[in-house]
Structure formats: C-alpha cells, structure tokens
Image 1 (cartoon, helix red, strand yellow):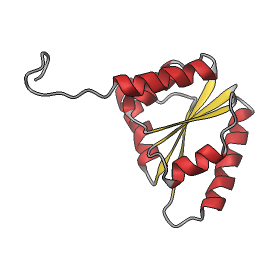
Image 2 (cartoon, helix red, strand yellow):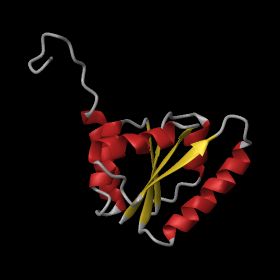
Image 3 (tube, helix red, strand yellow):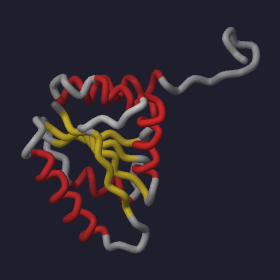
Length: 135
C-alpha cells in the first residue's frame, strides 16, 4: 500500500484531510499531512519532512506526496526528497487528485501516481449555466 502525504501551506494539508473525512465518512489510514509554516527555514522543513517520509517508508511500499502549489516552499522541499519509484511528487493539489490517489493507493506507486494525475485533470471542468446538469 502507498502512503499519501499532503504537504501544503499552514493548515491546507489538514483541511484536505478533513474534507476526505467529510466526503468518505472516515479518514484513510494511509493518509497523512505535513503543514508548512511560513517563518520556518526551508532546510529545517526539509529535514522534518525527510524524517516523516523515512517513518512512512517503514510501513508502506512508497509515498505519494501531493503539494498545493508548484514552485512554492511545500513543493520545493518535497521535490528535493523525490526518489523515483519510492517517493513521488504531484503538485497542484485538488480534491479529485487526492480522492483518486486514495482510491488507487493499493496499486503500485507508478500507477497510483498516474491515476492521481489524470484524476486531477479530469476534475477540472469549466461549467456555465448552459451545460446539462447545471443546477
């Protein structure tokens, strides 16, 4: 099983996990968060995140890190810890990405990564009141 780790600014990571609980009625045992505080040095954050990942790797076959914004500190520290095939990173987090990652977390890391990526794209829909199904 893959560990899904949400790495994001301040409380965003915890809020995504709360949304999963709201939608699914429970929180998945393999879903974790790492909140990035504004005034903490990136090197210290990187060290703390590495320790978190190392612990997860003791129990899971891989870690898929989902970050909120590409190029921002959470994404940058996550990318610096990427190990292809063991620790992978997707940036631009949305709920479709997170739910898809959880759904496929029993698959190989590469497949979970691909499904989360495609789920993120499929979850972005331009909607207007002319579309069928619009309330």
